[in-house]
Length: 464
Image (cartoon, rainbow, N blue to C red; front, side, top):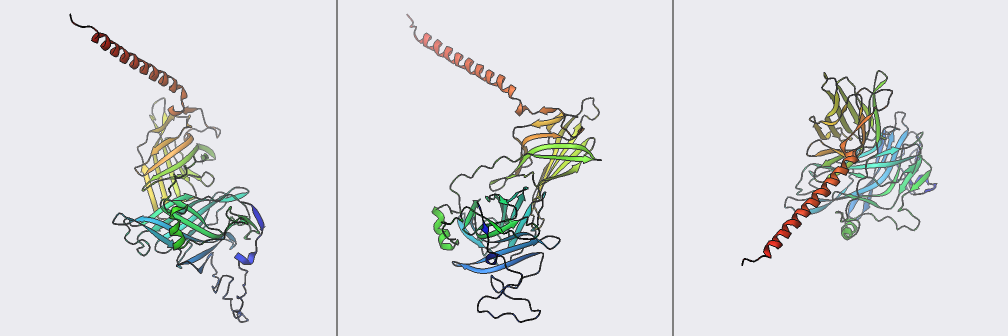
């Protein structure tokens, strides 16, 4: 991706008072608001997050483009996007057959839940359409760049017009990692050619995309960052119609991936802390990954850049609550055991996980386990485990931890105390295990050789 020249604003961003198309009558003088924009005869709405629906055609289906202009508290643009998209979904019928459904944007699109974002909270671009379908993407930023993180798509098989005779009823949600490269802050990301993402029997198509997250001072940038597909020699955009999507079943546009999915990378390690009366009372350093196992396993890395920490500290109990900025909440509760003994220890007793729909706040998944005895260490020390560990919350949800170090009690000078390491990190235990296994194998070989030798010797003598 390279930065291009300043883009031509009239091609994508309408002026404050657009002129009518050639041949159309000019609006009457006076206070009459213009009815024409550069995209067609649509009156521009005055709202905090303006959504313009543009009617076009692509093959047999109607294709609506979406324009979202999210405003901040001062009514300045903070997130802008204009794009077109379509979905190809493979679903199971009541007769155990599989059908392909095409889901396009309808005219009743809303934008509830879109937010500006800031240095600590992810920006969110969200739309809802049709009979209970929704799509969203969140953006994170650094000091110099911004990029898309995860795309969340929810489709409702109760929509019988799109999913006739569907065996599974109700909303189905998939989350995929976006492949967008980091974009320089104050640059506009543009991709006219068709791009697609495949996951869990769903292919998402995008084209004619223009967006900018974390808009500065309410002004859309003047430089473009182009996608790799928009090269000078690239072919023009081919809109995904019934014909070319169906015939693409033998190419990379197949709705069911034939290649193994790319492995999810280990999550980044986040550093979290709690304070009580301006004194640090809890320290945690950990990389977290959620493993949701419903129809297919789904791995979700918790991004520490957008995750905030809250909770409570106490003498015998402490709770660390993590909010990843994308409606995912994880609570870790620690308690002290043998409180009256001379040697006291702490351990992880309970974990609660809640996943919400960031569009309407409804609960997607809620799971808890209050019967743990993990991460045990002496009070006043920290617990450390560099290797991957797994917390079984229930039959649907697991949490994988990486590079863990935790101290929920008696933190001094805002630093971890001496660590008690987990057995997984103790490599010295491998040596006696390997030596013991080798000796056991040698003994077995000697015994077998002895038995075989005795049998042969016995068979060699004959009775006279």
